[in-house]
Image (tube, rainbow, N blue to C red; front, side):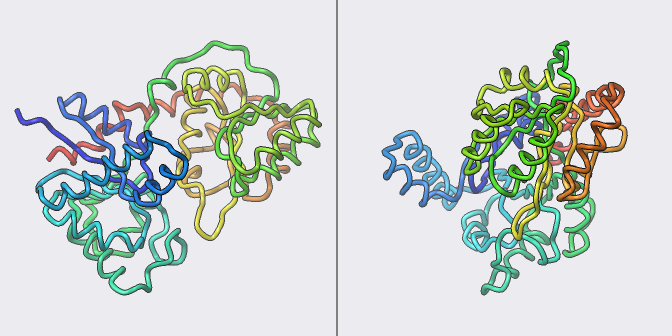
Length: 349
């Protein structure tokens, strides 16, 4: 039997988003390859930083793009933001290949998206052709994304497949740790759109609640300052080892996100929510599109953006509910790789 190969072609690489697809291919004796199409700025960065590993990676990506021109019938899953003008170029080199689209973006009526290219010459023509005719299947991370594409483009529903992101094996173990009372944890980028400053301010007024923040970003110095001034706020640098990270997470009662919508971004899914749920953490999040499809009243709490202080007061007054934690673990099992793999099956056809 000929080996099943699937190529992920993404702007910056997002391997974690394809754990379910990787599981499916491994079970079928196939293989998955990760490539990137935004390479020239990274080559320049590699040269400037004398980063040989990054340079070699981008040269490999470049050769792959060239190979696409002279080959055919490769299965390629493309990950590209809505209305990005780069699609015009990519369609030319992917002309003779089997193309699939994977997106987490939830707004497709041109009112809110990261790339403002829709008025540039040929962009919408390319995107209409891409979505309506070229791709065999469109895999969306949320139901909202699928509904939005269906409403704004002539795409048959049987070509739209909802396939959530998947947990990795590091988050399938259950740790029977004692959870510290009123303990909250945030993990991720330390940037303004994550509402870091407001979160810190809120917890600085609640000494009975402990906040652990793990990550890196432009707001790191702010986090470090608060952690020095307030005993109930702890900062840990970014941790790459997922097993070690999961053990730290498992000692907390709550996972908290205070995402703030910008002109180009909102929380579209958030892997960390399902990772926390798998470890028995109760998720608390601002009501962005992604978290709203994951968190229910039986598993956690959603709050209106900007009202984290009211949300924290409500949670603390209500007290820890072990049934929510138990429900969160149960719900997280639907995100196991073997479960998510089922939704990727159309790619094998």
